[in-house]
Length: 337
Image (cartoon, rainbow, N blue to C red; front, top):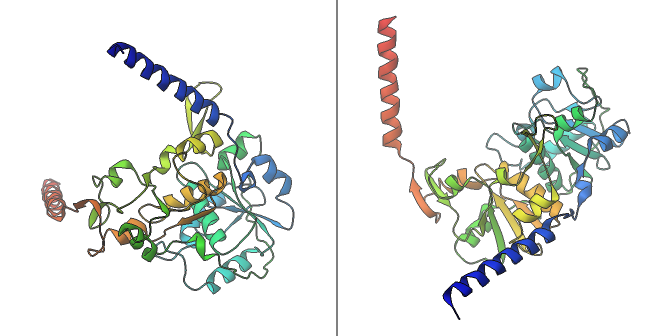
């Protein structure tokens, strides 16, 4: 067959497959759509006794203006739901005390909301931890605070305090991946688990080093940065993309198309924060056994005995040199004043 004809046939097949794939993805639906709620759903249910809406921002932002009826836990969700090392509390009684005091019972519908990229991971940290605690009926407000505003709803600056209640943890350990499981994957002893690196490509490749070593866990299945899985709406007036992140079935279906929903799937990042968003997205898509690894790269990359792919070392000498140069500049500036 003529060489140019082969090229034309291959190009045609590529186009046809691309079109076929686009048709399959377009109009995709979430397997668990109830996990994602709209502003209208929040407005219709927020005053019900069994619904608790949580503002995941800090107390200062909450005090300036929040969804009427929403509560604050006093700190950003990623801080209040984890210990100082960004890991879940080993003592589950702390969660029982926290949630009970906030007016959250085992029967509550709990909705977490965010405000743009700055706090979207706070909402997904709250979602993941609640699922790890065995809570049913946990949700995230799609589009966050911006979606609430753009639906024509007002904000309120009056603090909301729910009547205290009792909460009992019914731990769902499978939602959490321990480092021991990751080591089994890294060393090839565990082969039937999909591992997602939710960090940026630069972190995955070892170019952006945020521990003693850079790189990624050996046998990582795929690198899907959390930033590439979000959709952004166009401003109807300007036609420009807005900085408001939201979750879209078409985008997520395409992003995770290479993975098997029936296999255990673990996500990780630097501190197990960004990967909670991946966990939430996997739940939306109907993955059967998703998990988040909260120790993630900050712990793994600093343990010298652990194997690393694309291993790069943190350049302390270069950093120290830059610090010394800055100190010299500061001293010169002080003398000239």
